[in-house]
Length: 516
Image 1 (cartoon, one colour):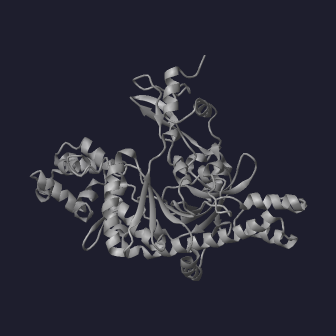
Image 2 (cartoon, rainbow, N blue to C red):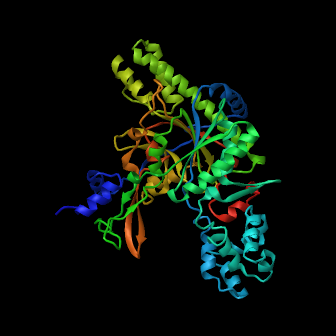
Image 3 (cartoon, helix red, strand yellow):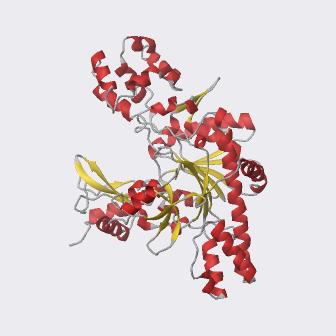
């Protein structure tokens, strides 16, 4: 019996997938993904570099020299809707009847309990003036609504399209911070940052991945902000956008791994997760790429430390890249002495954290050159790591892959076998986590772009349980962008200060001191 009907095949191909790829996805559901094989946590002295204040200062100054001639761009995944950010407001709006008793009951409930704090501090949010204006246009007054405790109306005008429409907007288009004479969207804060570490002679470039339905809104903001910052700096930011490719969507299946179909009988596709963005990253024309999440921005008053570490880590990456390129040119010409081979091997182990090759010293000369060439000729990244203080996020570990090779990887909780005591022990010993703070070099020593798709570990995806139209389904997520999608890159972890990590996961996070 054929797995797909003619209609299925048409739907698959219209998504940019081949039938063979669709069959592979179904097979992946059946066999699942192996757990990560943790060997040890990456810690300071064992996989995580700690920079002294002097080193940071020196590298920060070096960055401005080293970056000359490099193509630099900031890459920001910005397609996430803010619906999760306002999850508790949605729950409150759905449940609140309008009575004081109901308000007290709801604000003592875990899912909506932060509403007391939200309303007590409503005037601290950067979108407050925007909210007042939209209420005024509808003959409503915020002060009167607050006095009468008509909280449901207030929340509806924040979330719904009749008001601010924040419930359906992406985080990038939410007002995050208030200044003396302006308020800024998260989108704008990334532009401000880029002027401080992505500015070249005549350009500053940013690339945002967005949802198709939000493209027009982002483009309008980009047009306005380009004019604003050209007036301020004399150079307009070059802002580009892309959407997640349809071809990176994955099929959904029923719990028994048969094809899940929608109410119209057609196969259901789901976005493949942020790992799909390796395709977007692969198409950027840049030698140095800064990656940061859309919601991890702070006001100007505390940006200096972020700038310092961005430049320091950028300089460190450029120093390593330049040294790697010099070594590769020597190896390519085969004019390399035994002393240089040992120097390169020591650099690979001690500076690039490439795991020791136990047979290296027994290899002949050609085998050593081949090993070093293959080990060094790869995309490179520096990943900022912050001390773990309870925030969610993937962690840095030494991991053994299915071929027995050990390397530094960022591992999510879902990849870890929590029933395995040894794996749980390694997890418990972890001291840092990944705040999605990456700097990447994606060109080779011949100044050609690596094909980043060749460096993905396809065995590091996820299978999650979801539902659609009231029916359960299984969804397939591709290897995460900074997880399995970059698994075979040269990876160096550097400790960065916690103040450089200030994500906004829910709306009340905007009331934290670092956002006010």
